[in-house]
Length: 323
Ligand code: SAM
Ligand code: SF4
Image (cartoon, rainbow, N blue to C red):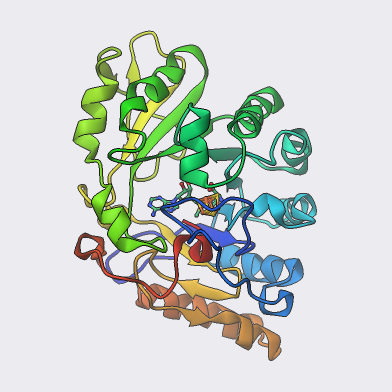
């Protein structure tokens, strides 16, 4: 699929649930969000049908996200079914890692190619502050299990937060000296429950890179599925260090993705409130042609660039979109 600006769209991010076992400050409110009823959430059969249609339109890479995708029962079976769809050659998953350890090998055997694990800190108290719940040890066990299961690459998503984890940027980057991990620093975006909080905690990635370079010189490098990240490596590094500056660096011209929310809306852009209700059409018995038309409509709505710098409120927050 190509959009009106000539961007090739071959990547679909699917949120399989709006539920999560953590309450990260940049994402959710402390009290959580009212969850959708199960009947509002796409069934696995519906997801598989939509992915089959999207694959015929050129989608090759599926990423499962949430909420926390590992809280949804049957996720392993979903991966098995997605793996069978002709044209889908890469399935990845973004997780907070805390439930991953006992599931990692099973997920890999089912056909999951890659995992991104979110980890913002190596300090238990800071983990508790950021996630408001959850255990750093469980997240670290998840990372170890991902490496042991043979996922490659294993990426670490670190949201850089001024005044919260800024003193740990060098320590997190230094993990790539010892482990084959690909640590990517992400600027906090105004897409959580508290937009003002995000605005007050932006840590520019130039600053993060300077801190990472206190460990050693970073030279340009590559990693599979780097997407919008600028990727580097220490001279003796076994992993890589990446920077994803949604606010300070524009990469919309290279955007290759659409999103599907857990409640069945196609979103042309993370930062746009525009969405297309595919669930309703699907449940009315739509045929393949009608479903393909919905993907075309989503493509036509893809903006040329986002306006995140304006720090405006959005209708959905991160855990309801999938990041
Ligand atoms: N629960 C899973 C997790 O945390 O990895 C998957 C869903 S989460 C919404 C996906 C990614 O979005 C995570 O890496 C998370 O750190 C990131 N994220 C959430 N809110 C964010 C924000 N306001 N700015 C930047 N990244 C954010
Ligand atoms: Fe949950 Fe992920 Fe949002 Fe944290 S970032 S609250 S783990 S969905």
